[in-house]
Length: 309
Image 1 (tube, rainbow, N blue to C red):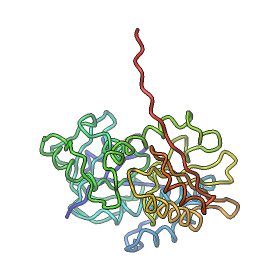
Image 2 (cartoon, rainbow, N blue to C red):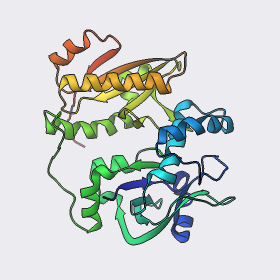
Image 3 (cartoon, helix red, strand yellow):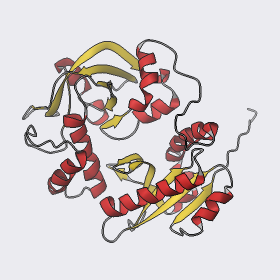
Image 4 (cartoon, rainbow, N blue to C red):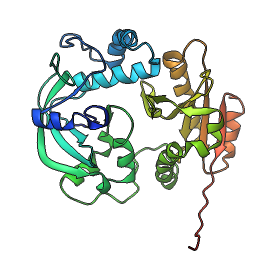
């Protein structure tokens, strides 16, 4: 089964026109060597080998930035398979679709030298036609993101059909599908309005070169809703929305993410904490957290009013 990826072609799509012309996708990340015989089957093995090189070339970058960069480079060079479909923004609100045709090759001295051959299709998707959830995923910060979870919607959009309107989830840990759907949107709202939240007093969403990279932070343990860092850089915060899931499930998930962050991301002098956000004043969740003081529970409120003008 083919997979779908959103691939940025340079910062702010700077090389989109070049890639569309030359039939390719690519990346840079200051790794100036041919990777043809240096791409392991697992991204974490590639990261282990190349994060030190990336940090050497970019001494002001953090371990988080290095992990994101190397992971994205591996995905473009190895993780994306022949036959997969890429969606690349052209910088004007439209995504061009392409089918990946070849394996990795190195275009030394050229823009985005770590490349894959692509056949760009005579099909585009307008961002405004996407569901909010797909817009959030395709608009996430980073060079590449796997959007195969929206396969059905993407294929319907390609076929010029309407996006699905039903709330459907095959996850049996979700008790309330409507809460799941609403809190998927809440995640984007939180990121956009972080400065107005209680968490912003102490934490900032992790940023790289002025852009937040902490939303939907991909790890080997799963995708963290929001990864934040304290303003004194001493603490990392794993933020998860309950999204209609059973209390025990979300607590276990946050603990797993916290363990991963502590083991793989945090610097030696950094601690890791967690936060769970839900709509309901969930007593089961409170009981579960009584024995886990490093995780804080927050309940969100929604207010709405009309103002006559």
